[in-house]
Length: 254
Image (cartoon, rainbow, N blue to C red; front, side, top):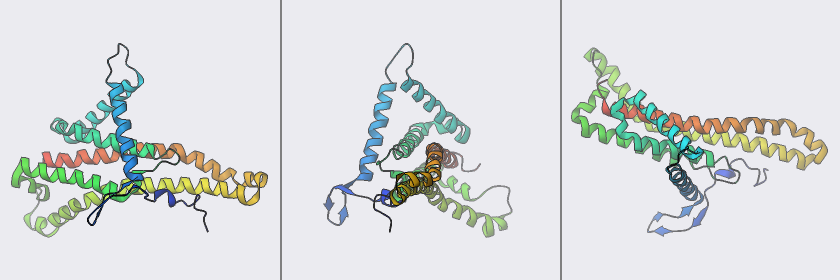
């Protein structure tokens, strides 16, 4: 049996910090909620510090400016200059996911993006914006997204339209599962290798256990920087796909 402290799944358990129920709805403040608040507070503090005017930009301001240009260029390349109207949304989404991922790398902190309900909510927020803005801007023209031009009508009705509809419906699923699965699997691997190293020392004693723990400890050290990279890449991929989907709302006929 795996000890509670070494169980790789125990790090994903939701714990109620402040219990609150309204009727049948459980609105308790949990460790996941706390980490979301911490992420938002850290983001606000970083942006406030980076907004101070200085003759020579500090690190916080330099990173903020690089982040601004990074997201802006991402939107231009994926959705065109028209997509910059969504810059506040995409930037907020990218920074929130990035901070949530990075905070989850701190020992004893909770990774909110390791729960699919969180990533699915973010994905539905994206798809909801795409549908609402696409219909508002284009009206029935938004349906061109499912009715591509230059294709024989029989092929459209029989094959293309069903594929496009299924593809569109699966977007929030793929968007949420990709982020959740990568964060979940990465943290499980880290906990497994770290827990195995501790178990070797505990079971065999310090000296023989330390020799046996070399390999899992080395794997833990090797996976840690990789997991930091994954934290950034997954935030980038989520934001990039958001830009691509918003491009469909802006230009459904393309």
